[in-house]
Amino acid sequence: MWATEITYLPFEKGFFYLIAIQDWYSRKILASRLSSTLDLAFCLGALREALATYGSPEIFNTDQGSHFTAADWVDALKAHGIAISMDGRGRALDNVFIERFWRSLKYEYVFLHPLADGLELRAGIRTYILWYNQDRAHSSLDGQTPDAVYAAGATLCAA
Image (tube, rainbow, N blue to C red; front, side):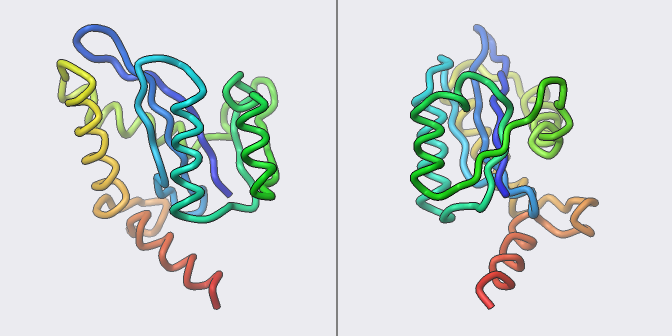
């Protein structure tokens, strides 16, 4: 099962929007995109990257925001045979793992490193996500990294 959400990240002259797609089981960030606008294209770009790199999940969970109810988004999921799960009104905790990632990203990186522009922010987020996936031990994963748990799960599924 995968989940996604959009957040905003402040920088010196305003803010950017970030979408990340996360594997629920391992907490691994599979794809992300940064944008200065809230258009659908950056969301679809992240989705296409995740699908091309990792294949299709059985279920994809989102909130009921306009990006995730848009025909292009829904059609892309249906074209890959993915079951669509959307949080109900007032059910913010349904997407708790991606919300927890936002908190970690903001408090461990964004708020500690004020950045001047989108290029710095993009590079910093890329570095943070690599560290988060490959090196950051997670207590909820018994001290393992998301990459290690994802790889172990992929091996079990292939067997």
